[in-house]
Image (cartoon, rainbow, N blue to C red; front, top):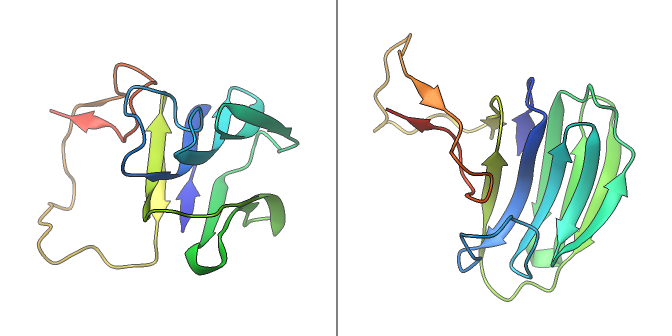
Length: 143
């Protein structure tokens, strides 16, 4: 899948086991693997180990390639066809995508149509705000 990054300058995107701790930063434990940005610093993180990456701060989209059967998670810059990092993972459980957003927003692009059961008007009014803590993974909350 791909994620349009927009103006967000603080986020973490990757995968995690459902059992990953919900009260920790993703990537700071053995149950999650992420690509993360904090202002102009880009890192990949797993099990509290970080590796700094040389990424252009104007990158607009992040590609994530999960090959579960071959134990590989890769991140890339699709606009420039640049490979950013690959984790080799001996998966022990199913994984799911994880997104942590501290400012602005992200848009996930899967190439799949929206499910039929989702009913939304053409222009939806929503007062959205970032989650109150960067320790909590997830998208924005709407009221």
